[in-house]
Image 1: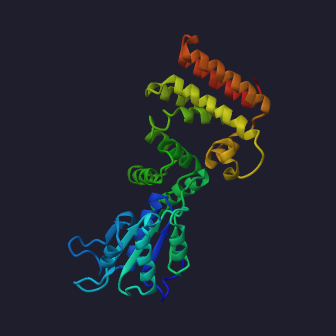
Image 2 (image 1 turned 180 degrees about the horizontal axis):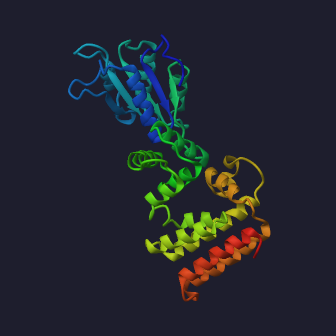
Image 3 (image 1 turned 30 degrees about the horizontal axis):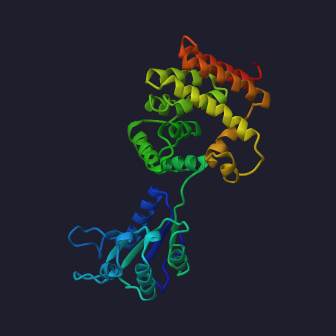
Length: 331
């Protein structure tokens, strides 16, 4: 966060970014700092700040929102989505920055993209505090987020449990935060990988992509266990076969790509940066020959799952064993 508000615009703060959970937390933090005692400026009918979107706000309405309250003191206003502000609202905001109400609290949010960039530049150059909440896209950033959530809750989680939780819940930060809070409240003692896997059994382990990840990582026992749970909980064999094929193909694509950051290769490979980083870690132990052999194995399994074999479950288990053997060089 930037330094305290300058004399040019007291009480005005800006949150930039499109990571919804982080934006909500930043807004709440700024409001708490500005009104630590809960007064003044809240709507007297609800005792809450006025919370509006820029798209539906006219300049006259803006003036009314930031005018001193009849009950004394300045107003507390949150205006979201400034990238959608009209020209008239933009002009009204710029005028307000030049002569703000010293008792008012104004928290603004902007997605941070190219849309509405002129207003964003004006705001950031005005000296007001800026909190940045960019989209979390890297796998490592999500790991850090979950680790920090547990730490804030007074709990610790090892990398394996964090990885398992992300595989189970997904990449949405709101869902991850809720999962951390639930685990911290429900699980006594250490939060380890086996605890998380058991807690989310049927969600984490029923994922075809989790099966594929464990297989290409050479974790035969884990991959077979997750395969059985996936089938028991109703995951279609063809989806697991497809996930295995995607997992092995990703090894070939990333392994054959030039070195560089995940962001630099994302467009070329058609994969998000966090996935490129994960596949690079999974490439440990693989050779080009092993990847080629694994591709043949998943192609055969796919054909059997789609009707050429008598048992889809057997075909998938056999494919997983062959993939692990290809990684080990024993194919």
